[in-house]
Length: 447
Image (cartoon, rainbow, N blue to C red; front, top):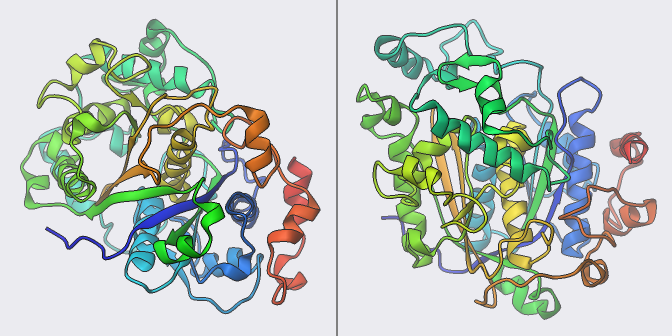
């Protein structure tokens, strides 16, 4: 088992853009800028405090991260560009946590952004071996392949069970102002939507999305010097990134979807956080398809082994049940801009544990779990707790407005910021008008 980090790490600030359908109207520079400014405001920090930057994206040229970070200031900090398939955002969070836990930096900013093409995921490099080729070849041998999106074809089970998962995710998303889709559907509507690959229908499959998300991770040492910020931080109590074992090629569709690495990541993160699956009260997990949520409930230990479908049928994945899964709406309804997804999951759980998500709050929560998976492969599981060790309590909007750096409740309103607020958090000494260009004006025009 990995060694326990010598020091704690905390999420101090988070920021999100709306997740939208890819139409080529919003550039990654705008998405990263908006999310980053919101995170700095939420953290009550100026960019000069940031000691390292981590940029998370899958579709884009090298050094897109520098292009985004330079908009806040050209302070000559190290900037790392991360691509780890759909787990890219959580991989960035893992890197940030390691940095602050092992004394490399005290304040690290992670920004995920994605400007995607319409339609299902495609490879941009046709002249070299695809890294997931061995997975698709195994799928071809065991299940056969159609023209449907590749990830939709790997798992199949009772149609009503999978449709119920999607129905619940769409129901949850109606209260998330950042969700790409906020429509509520009946079970019959989910089942009767366009078939993608039996038994999965269109409403059980996540869309491609444009979006951005950001988080600022700080060390215990930093927090000890800034006592006034302790009231808002959320502890990253356990975390692990796992990759595939040989079981991925066992000829089981469930194993092919990363079951083993999810289980490894979950067990290791929970052991570090000193919790059991039964302690988890709210969870954001990687539901790129409803089938993935089904097998992930099992792999995380949230259901009895082989009985995730019974958990779904009992209503134990929503409010009033055993654990609230994807209060944000999940990837299925919120959207899935690859580089931003893991950080958006983090933001939702931070708002839940602070008590700010007061229109969809899971109350009296002490432990939250995040799961983010990328085929090819990497699974990241993170356990979050309040720094004070208490359960969350609902915080009303008027109180949040006084605490929030954006002067509204960012958990329930997807709004923007003012020029004065931008000026407050951009570097005081090393900002560049040339690096910023017209990004600020373009972002503010969308507000």
